[in-house]
Length: 352
Image (cartoon, rainbow, N blue to C red; front, side, top):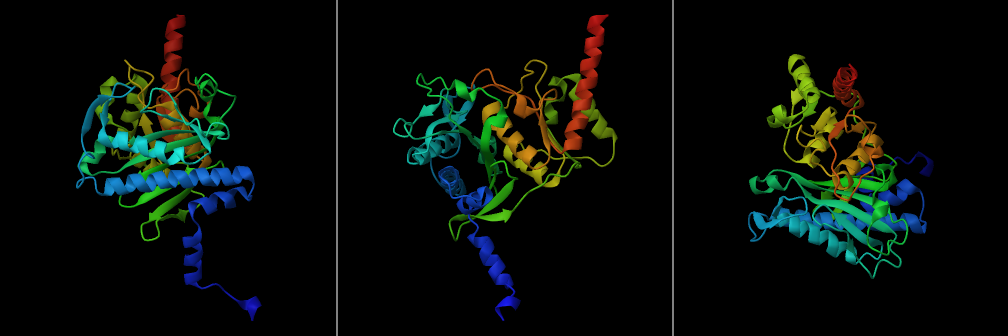
C-alpha cells in the first residue's frame, strides 16, 4: 500500500509553504557546511530587513516621518527621502546582530559602514540600495531594494574597501525586494533565479517561482523617453526603430526594481542610458547595475553598458555609475547593434 502512495494536492501545497528562503538556500547548495549555513543566515537577515521595510511602507500614509524629504542631500548630490534614511538604518540594524557581515556599503553612505564586533569573524560585505524608486512612495506606487553579497578579501585595515573595486563576477549572491501588492524577494546564489512571496499570515517568504528564465525576446521596451533629446544618437536610433516596427510595447514605471521585474518575467529590454553630457549614466554599478546583471545572466538574459558586459566592468570608486541595457538576449543585442554602428561611423570619420 505504501508503494502506491500518491501525495495529495494539500501535501504539495504544504511542501511549498515549508520551502522558506533559508531552507531553499541550503537546498540549492546541497550542503549544511559552515559556508552554506552562513549564506542561509545572510539571506534570512535580508528577509528580516525586507519585512521591516514592508511593514513601514504598508502604513506610509498613516505614520508621521515616512513620506517626503529630509531636507538633506546624499553623497550623490540627490535630495534624501525620509524612507531612504529609514531603510538604510534597517539594514544596518539587522546586520549589526548577524556576526557575519564586517561592513555594509550603500549608495546612501559615502564610505562603508564597519561593524567592528563582527569583523574578526565576519567574512562578507553587503552592498545595497535600501530604497529604489523612492519618488514613487508619495504616490503609492511600487518600489524596491537591491542587494549584493561579496566575500571580503584582504584585511582592509585602513577601511579603504579597495577589494570591492572588482568586476561583478565576484558577487556570490544578489537579488532584490519588490514592495507592491505583495512583497516579493528574488535572489540568486549563482544557481538560477528564484522568487519568494511574503506570506503575512506566516511572517515568512515562501517559494513562489523556481528557476525563472527570461525569454530570448520580448515585446516590451522600458525607458524614460522624456530624455530622448539628451541621449546619444545611437539610442535615439533604437527608439525610432521600435516606433516604426510592430510588436513593441512601451512600459515604464519609474522604479528600477519594478521595471526590471517585469522584464525578467515577460522579456524585453530595460534601458537607462547615459546622456551626451553625462555618458556614465545615473545608476550605480555596485549597488544597482551589477546585482541586476548577476540575476539576468543567471536567468539566461544579458546586461550591457552598450559596449561591455556589466559584470566585466571594474569600478574606479565605490559610487561609480554605468549606463544599463538589460533584459532578453536578442533585445539587448539589438540595442548594442545600433551603438556599434554609430561607434564605427565615428571611428571612420576620425580616421579620414
